[in-house]
Length: 88
Image 1 (cartoon, rainbow, N blue to C red):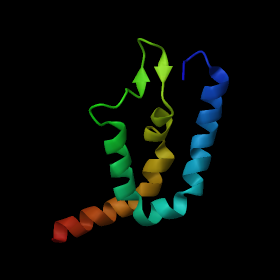
Image 2 (image 1 turned 60 degrees about the vertical axis):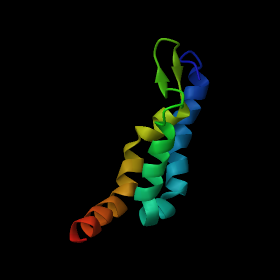
Image 3 (image 1 turned 180 degrees about the vertical axis):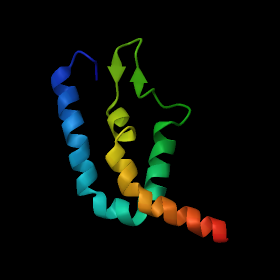
């Protein structure tokens, strides 16, 4: 999406938290592996940038990656995964 497309940016900005809340039961149970896999997909080598200031382009992935709600909902499984990995 281009920066100038304000309506699309507003719609995506409003719908990303709704989508995260709809998927919250899954994220609370298996959030860490899902989030890791998603971030690996977004930041892979051949992927387009999620924010390109030179061309004035922003991806919907930018709003998902920077969402504090996603990070908050994945926190329980991430802390559990760290606890299990420490104990071996």
